[in-house]
Image (cartoon, rainbow, N blue to C red; front, side, top):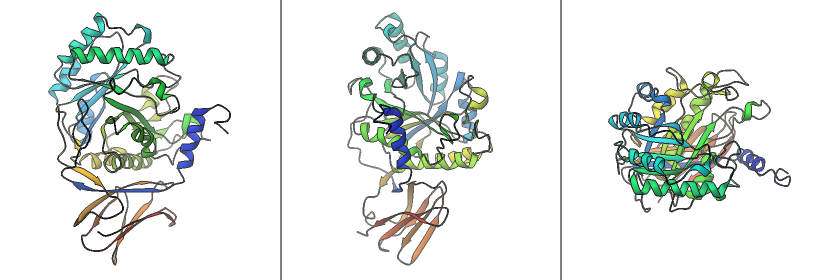
Amino acid sequence: MRRSQGDEQAAEVEELRASRVATDIALAVPVQNTDEPLRLAKLEPRQGCLIGVRDEEGTNADSFTQRLGRPISIVYDYLAYGDPFPMNWAQDQARAGRAIQIAWEPADIHAVLDDEYLEGFAQDAARCGTGVFIRFGGEMNGSWTTWGSDPAAYVAAFRTVHDVMARFAPNAAMVWAPNQVPLSNIDRYYPGDRYVDWVGISVYTVRYYDDDLSRPAFYDSPATMIEPFYKKYAARKPICLVECGVSRRSKVENTDADDYAAARICDLMNAVRVRFPRLKMLCFFDRNNLTGAIPGRRLNDYSLADGSLALQALKQAASDPYFLFRYSPGGESLDAYEKIGQSLPVGFSGPILASIITYDLHPALSIKQGDKTQTIYRPYWGRIEAHAGPVTVTVIDSKGRIAGMRALSAP
């Protein structure tokens, strides 16, 4: 109906809603090295994932690091096109072992030219001492951005910025980052493989869409939001979550949702490791927008506060060395994950990690091998044994019903 009415964006939302009734089980085992058949992009680690946060006005990265209990490898913030390169901030992050991501937003897309300002910006980026991810004109496919009103002009401007950065700043990577919806128009904005180093998206998991109690979003898994972009681009480009957040409280509901946020953060971190090996950057938006956003945007609390269940879930997942503690050119984690196909790995005994997409917020996972059955809950770590026979993995919803099942044969 939505598509026949010409509302493609609403049609995509309805398709996403339909996918919520499905259950999908993905499994992986930790390994020390994986084969990397793809040529690495600029600033791409061979394996592992950069993890970071918005360093709003240079005040949050150190606080977030202390709360998380471990170093982070990247920070991001916004900058208006025309403002000078944030050299002091960039050098501070370089000394802390972090890369930077700049969400660079032009008020007038037609004013982006190969000129003194752009060349000077690129030269400063080259001198800052760390990797620089340039997210130029993000969410350009959304109707709320001024720089996306003319797709041809946007593509030309992106290519101009790329060419200048390529001449002057070898440490800078260009990030093309459309909004999650609508998907139908993004091809018009794609500058071409030659000009894009990374493909990024923003993923915000909320309790309700658009502050509307009649539009619940409880069942949306972060993995279902990432998957369309991953399928479309990951064979050509590394993928990054340029910013992401999970609501701990919404304005419209105004009740504590910390447990929900913890569950979805766990789901996100599991999906990154199990489903999306080429998703190699993950940046959290750590702010309470109920108080900190501009009027009209005060809808959700995305903060990762001390003592919150959301922070505890992130700390537990981020303790995995797969998430890189420090940025270094060409760096990598020594740990990776190998996704399991239809059969168990030959001769493998050890832990197994599951990423579950299902309609229930708190499902259990049953792992049966031989005469032994394990019932596990988030973060969904189980164990398999070599030479103990095939495995049956079952998702059980919170009412005790079977939501999905997967069988793994023994080699």
